[in-house]
Image 1: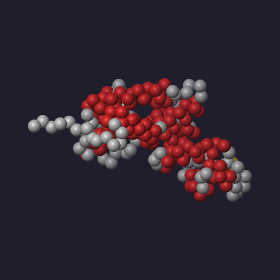
Image 2 (image 1 turned 90 degrees about the vertical axis):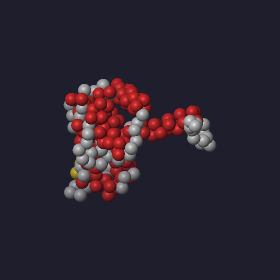
Image 3 (image 1 turned 180 degrees about the vertical axis):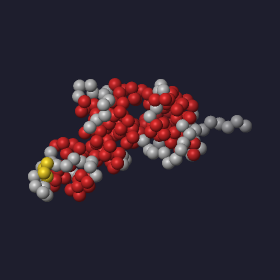
Image 4 (image 1 turned 90 degrees about the horizontal axis):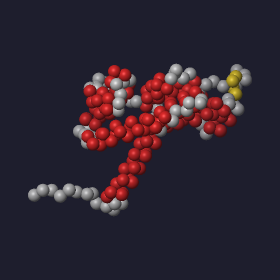
Length: 213
């Protein structure tokens, strides 16, 4: 198909497709002349991936890294996860105290010496943001966070396809990047469900503990 047909099929404007081509997010089409190229289903599929990544908030640079990993994957799942994590882990603005982050990593069952620096920085940044806001997560709630994160990770790793390297790459990279908004949305929905069950519907008043006289 020509670029105009690719644009119609993908609902992505021609100008945007040309931008993705310049940014090396989308592979070049098969040249049919000096000014024309032919595109196929692989380009249509890649456009959907690019749009999903960018919509999820992944930067152009990290999207380039993700699609590069899809085209030339690292040797194993661990390295693929590193690519996916780098795409969604915020970069710290300065040096951070990683003591609390290392403690959390070890509570997950990890070995501190093996923690990826980017992940460690992401954990430290999250903890620093809480501290700057003066908010402390209750220890029993943090325990549940750690437990839930470990269980989610185990389920996701168990689901890695073993019969197709291509599907494994897509599952690991895209599954890691694109499901984060779903996890957050499910958390908010669960909060509403549990709150309604415990305290009543939207007209219920805030439960208050009587103050001692």
